[in-house]
Image (cartoon, one colour):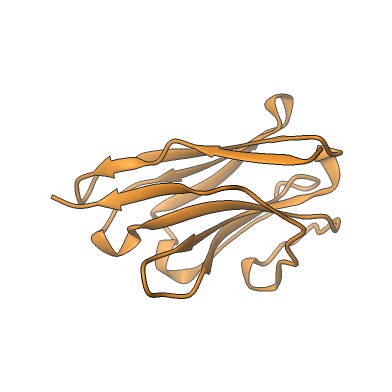
Length: 126
């Protein structure tokens, strides 16, 4: 059974950092694209970043470029989202998601999600 399990959320002050993890199991890891999405209260879910497990290619939404970094550890079937210089507007529930197509140059805007994780809360506040 395919599972995506997020961890690493929490409360952090503006300007601080957090690292989210997405651990995957139950599917062939090598042929997926993994993305991070977020949903703030009263807002639609938006794509944040994605990574091709096959090629390592990455893509970010404009609002997080230069602050967030997505990476993968194939030995652990885990994708990370390092978030630096956090802002109050980054507050949201962050979801990990999997797209089952082999994509060498992924785009967060065109991901076709097959599986979602349960989400982890990130709160940026002083």
